[in-house]
Image (cartoon, rainbow, N blue to C red):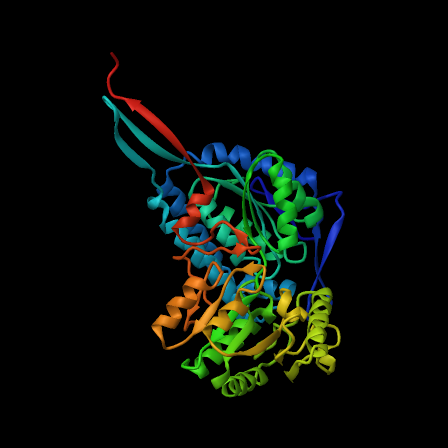
Length: 480
């Protein structure tokens, strides 16, 4: 059986029920992990609280250095960790390595920001009186992380939380806990003090909700679906703890008639089908100007047709299986809704044939043209390898369609016209807009959603604000 990790120790969960981890490509059992619940969450939180009392007093520069050393230790184990990530999540080996590199890069980014944590000074409040704004860590942070990017989405929370002096209790998805617990142990052995980073494995309805409701947790950072996010906000509100919510998305891509169509089509293919389309920031709706629609769709279709489907561990695989059979069934229903509404299927819309696909959650990369705007691929978040394309007359129509969703996470526009690019960037209702660029999230820039895609920021120096509290201090220079 695998393990939990808190208080600086492996916790094997003796006496607990277990959860079975299965390979999405084969359906075979990979491991069993302890099914932690409220009791284990309480133990981990108390260990984190005890560690916080010391960790918060470590100089920020030293915390940053320790984070850098922990990141280096994880990087050294990438070759060992990547196949484990493939086996529990299903993504191609190349993508697993990229994800782990991104985890390390984010920790290094925040380790290097340690000396940028600062407050403020306000002179002359009164005679011989000045003020200070002091920035302090919050305490224990609860981090609930989904299965699609188990390590990078953890790093988004772990980096700013630890460098600002907080301690963390993480609850990975019940289907992808293996790499997370191993990383926690690696970071501890690299010098991170006991209790600073803890991991409890278990179900969201048990361990996750217990973490959200625990009175000693001062902030909950969650990435996942909008319905679950809303429920967790209610749990957290009982103790008035802070929350950061990175939720669902239905990201639009606008392709204007002056765009570089080859580059735009490549960006659409990668942006939709990376990680089998299971990304909150995946391109999920494309709106292309009538004048170039036929050429763009033909170019995109050629690229989609070259995507190789297979098990993540196999050489040359470009798209692995969906993570769960239930996820595949949901995508199938959404695609069928599009077909029933009149969409033209250019690729996919079915499960692949062949013995290599029989036991996995495989679904062919799917390209749809002109489904109804009331179909599920237009109105819901599609978390899988299906991309709908619509023709539009001009930029106003494209932006109107782009904003016609309750979500507002990412977006992109392709044009050679700076005025068009600026207008789209200002008018699209999303927390992130790429102009003539693939959808890469940079640690230097704040990331977060609008509308039902959530609130709060990850990445950027802005993330530090969400893991600290400010305190006003008034100082009288002379006693009279």
